Length: 120
Length: 151
Image (cartoon, rainbow over all chains, first blue to last red; front, side, top):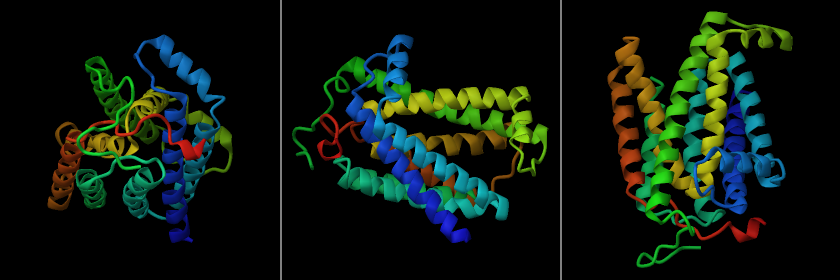
């Protein structure tokens, strides 16, 4: 049960971030950082199916995390976070078409290992 | 969709000088709101005490705590600035760069709350910092427009 929840957290977290990125790229760049353009961004998000689906996936991940925390300690959630970094980089390359070379792979790997060590 | 190294494909706005500055500002805002929001939320929840309840009303009571409320408001700003950043930069850039929030929370806890940092945690801090520096050296955006096949 614990590992099933860990898997749900990792997969839904990854899906959520990838969908949000795809949705925000479709919506177009937030060009300036004025309150007006941020308000326009928020307004458009409500009609952005990719971002709404991303929110839904992140919500599932959040509630899976809550149930995991209710049956075990927070250190059990750490592998899910670490795996998400690598999974998301993989999907960023093959689904989002980002140019992921050795620097980004090394960065994701270092962060994933660092996150595990920080939980000690 | 790999791009050649001689001519990196970038978004129409993100490569200009003000575009790079705006992306940097968003990165800093995402990191700062992540740290402040989580610290404030966890401080508030510790004051509220443990909630073991199936009733949503007990969770609603937690919102009455000013630190909890502040944490939630700051995390809302975090979410919006993260989305704004993702509209301008690659996910594979944003993820490692914003992981510096972990380092700030650990270092902040050490100096402000005198948390003990074991050698494993120091090593973790060093590794994450290395990851942040490596990702910072890559261009923030390497794609042109949205991923076509997802539309």
